[in-house]
Image (cartoon, rainbow, N blue to C red):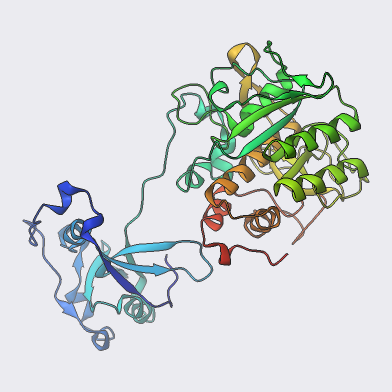
Length: 422
């Protein structure tokens, strides 16, 4: 139910509606349905109030005419991230012992007060506004049903705020992924071979890297395969695995417009990669992420402040990776489904896949609100993540398992409301 208490105001902007709706003159009456009589605020405590309510199947709430003329109430949950549009002059109420939810017609601009008054009645189970909800975006990628992680982190709701922008780049530092994969090619931009100090040449791609790339940015809504976290650009950066190569890869990425860098290798506890993360943050306002480590048990790694380590969770939010003081966040990575070499798809498990999923989410946050800096994005993720275990931080899940939906909603708020104060 919508939490109330903020001022309610109205918007009447039919010029913003589609022409086919704007030009109609919708009838006020609906055959077979009754418009409730107006009930004043001071009448809501009357004993005969139920007689003035009309069951929803029989009620004309005037929602049709309000929608078509652009006449909406507006309210916001205290502490929530978005404005709700509701049907003005209407309150939905369930009286105890009544079969249906009823509609009450109340005074305009006093709907919130009416809900509060009704909640004080002993014969009322609940009362709420008649909210205009919005449909969730559902991609047409046919194998997205195999990707359980999207439901867990709330991707479908997050995508209502944006699918990502190609101007936001994610570097996948690894052996090169399959750049011509049908589900990656459209989001792929030219990368760099750090070892050869030359552009990456086309090739069959590396399995591990291709899985990582798909978790971050497999093309959404292209009628093929699966969906990444967002339609952001991905660029391959090839290394053999030396820390020096990872440093150079991060610097190259920062110098070439990448705001998010994923390195799904060990090494997150090293001072050299902390320096790389700091360079990325300073140069490109970016974020470096790495896995917490595959395996069981605690690792006594240093928590480097500019290297974000992601532990792996399964579909039930159970930890499936190493843990320790280095962990910052958790994300799905156990038995996930992603792009694979040969233009195919496969299941895999590893914190290596939790990290690029985290990176894809960060990139979408930057896409939704380009004004966000790295501290802003991290603060949003800290505030919105699902806290598991000891709060507010613990060695298993860090600040919590990422909640893409809540983070996207927070990122969509005006800049002044999202800054962390860093």
